[in-house]
Image (cartoon, helix red, strand yellow):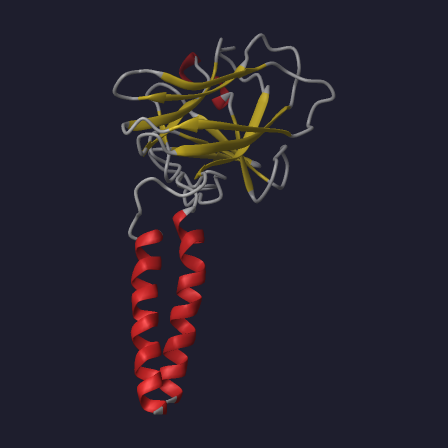
Length: 231
């Protein structure tokens, strides 16, 4: 009977947690906290004091476009927003360009999502602007296009939160400077990107409402068996 009670308790916990699992962040490493190549010299990473320049797929979850680079700050020397790492969009002006970094993710048609992120100005004077763009990779339809200029005072994080509807296609979240400065302008730092479904997802996923249904059915079964034992 003790084993049955433990099972009943475990399934109850799963049932309670299932809706939360369905609303997990869709983005991978949106806060840039997973940095296995930070401070390491490799084909796609070059470390300096307090930052590392990344290319290709050096940042898990993200793709850095060819002929661009991403600068990752840690908390020791250069400005950051939260956690241990933040992204400086100038990319050190590598290849004569600033960063163009993106992440693709699946969407459900008609599902409402919320995109949030933080950004801040570091050094004023650049003619570049920070661009955070969300678009459909199949139709090229733009769902969000935020363009931000330097703000004073600097080093004050700005939070952005916006809703959008899924198209059923793969969507791309892209971060760049548009127009570019093309050099090491130290203009913008970004962090904490997140995409979370709002309300009840239109299509249950294996770790969300499907898990809730399974847990519920199992819970009923265990409860019946428990009553039989008690009888």
